[in-house]
Image 1 (spheres, one colour):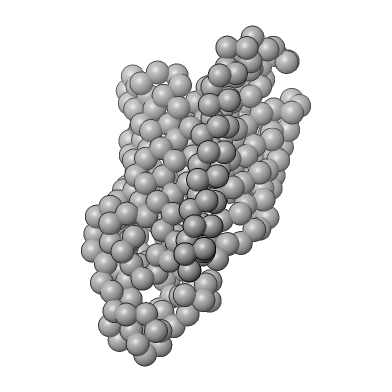
Image 2 (image 1 turned 135 degrees about the horizontal axis):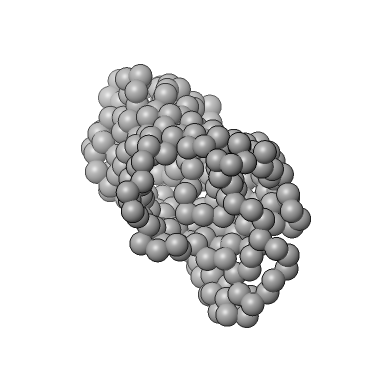
Length: 293
């Protein structure tokens, strides 16, 4: 057991050293890379073009659920479509529509208004819920049903590189999905006209309904359908996260992108018997075709 713990600690330290080292190397390289002019900057997406779309795929390695020791690697579609102030995206395709600070969350979104540096957007997205078959630890627990989530985001741009976003996402169908509030600070920098890096860090809070659905163990299931003890999670802090992503135009239309993210569960989520591995990471790499009309 001690050997296993030491091995995991060593892997965590190696991962953190790699992430920090990569970020430091990119930052140190900025003065030199900023002088590189590979090709003319492609025109930005705007309403004059009619619409912008992105289609591609990415390979993602991530835990089965937040807190799981099981990991999976899969190929995911990357879709993005923007007409004026409306955007539909999936698999991170929204962030590839243009090189700017607007993350364009998954699902259907609309930019409602902008006043100087303050923006407001709203949207809808499908939440796939969670099934007990997703992980051996979840076996015997009730499934979390699929639902439709709303999303309201307030974004403040301090300058062209740095922004802070707060997003409230409630379950609109009342299927015990609860609500989350995520706050993220994001910094983006174009190291050349065709390559951009982004660093994001923040935290997520959740109400008691969400925490009980995703991290609780019901009293009637504890010791009956699952060996886990009864656990009733309360609302509050859910997790903190940090991420690094890079996207670059390899031609006038093709975008190569990738990223790494690290998450730590907090509060009652971390104390849950489902949080077997409360600190975890994800890695992604993809290629997409981007076009304006």
